[in-house]
Length: 412
Image 1 (cartoon, rainbow, N blue to C red):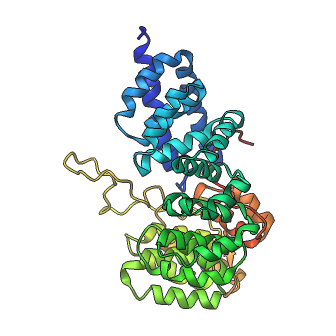
Image 2 (image 1 turned 180 degrees about the vertical axis):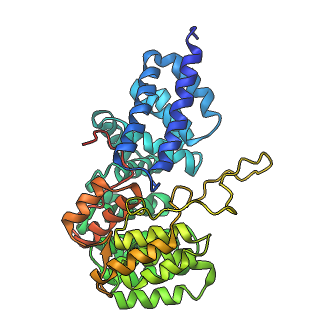
Image 3 (image 1 turned 90 degrees about the vertical axis):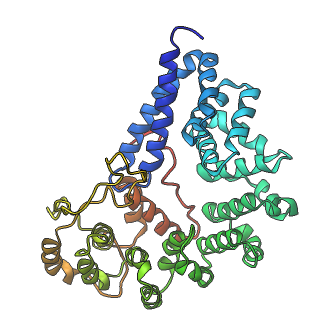
């Protein structure tokens, strides 16, 4: 190891940390495409520094991989693939397959690399006899929105592939993301699976292909706390009629523990009928910020622009806490949402509410049209971009679902 070891160690640490920061940022309400792009530029600068001395950098990556963190796997994987060294690539594949988190780092690296470098490896993994390699490839295709063509057909027909639960589920999900209408019959088969993961993504993709009646099969997930609840809400309430959606929301609201999901369902539906209720829920400190976010989704009101932001209540403790004995360091999901001034918001809504028609769906204060959604995918914050992408994909069964978490690469 040369005398610059400490510099390469810092590069590895910084890339790994910045990747974690980016993985959080892509779901945050205060980041937009330009912000994500600037983060990516910082990551690339550190990666370039590591490529100055690949072997020295790799030795440090090997030490970092012992942490089994997704950021460290991402950093090591980018270096390995750029080195064209099969042994290094084999090592990061092994590390990436250890846990669900490390897998995210590995697949993210395949989404990060230039096409000329990533595509040959994705093709190699697709043709591999190792089903885990196929799983990596399908996940990479999902991240990059690459159509694997007949490879996807074969995965959906082979019994050994269907027995690999994660591979099968990700392949079914990819059918919907890419709008592979030719594979709809495979979704019908998978809808009857005994495994929830398989059944969910089969129905989810079916809805994206335009089979709206499949929303009935996803309705149970709307009520079930778990990994698919929010995904189900984000689809189901965009395809139901307003009357059907209201009935479902009423049923969901019977369980007081589901109040946050009720608010999110109201936001997805976009019916201004719920705005006064949302304003009333802002008086509850625990619901104030998420309710204000839902109001913005429906009405398009910008709290900062209209000076509708208030100071955090005194009883609110930042999370994660600065207390040294607090072991919980998880990020509050409302952490970066603004605190609403309820009285001012109520006044603004009284003045502008007459412009909205009860029983119609709105997104950010506008009628839902392709051009408006495309503009928001480019220019809104990350959460709004994701919502707009889903809205657009459902509106047009031929339009692939844009991945708003993917690398920006060139900001314009």
